Length: 85
Image (cartoon, rainbow, N blue to C red):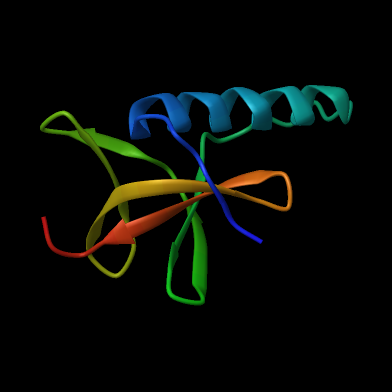
């Protein structure tokens, strides 16, 4: 079940990247971790590098999609996107 996060997208992106880095370091992996977020549009979900443009976060995914909201799903943060901005 989705638990909507009551925080701005900027903070949600920072929180997710910090949590992901912490999980990665705990795993003992020595591989460099690429900063990626999970973005979804309906039931489709992808992991993409967030890019900042004009004060907002976007991901490239068959075009450019704006991150519009964040929810915690099964302990991880997932971002919903909008194709119109």
